[in-house]
Image (spheres, rainbow, N blue to C red):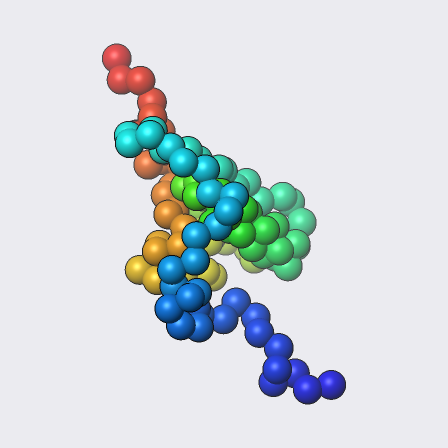
Length: 114
């Protein structure tokens, strides 16, 4: 099996990839952002990684802002970890495709003050 031909989360390959707009993208009026949240299960890291990859694809396809959970303990990792430790979700290139915010930022943005 020639594994060199496999692509795994490769970077966009040219102008067509860079300018692609998903047919599932939801149009929203200005100032009305739509969100999708991610909460990892209690499984092992590989299960968490796969579920995060799925939610990233859904967020990118629908044009929703991905809301990440606060740092937390993950099975067998023995310390509180943020997904930033493993995935470049706040990098400029990632943010071009999927806007990512923390749950704290969501509460500060959407919570009624009073």
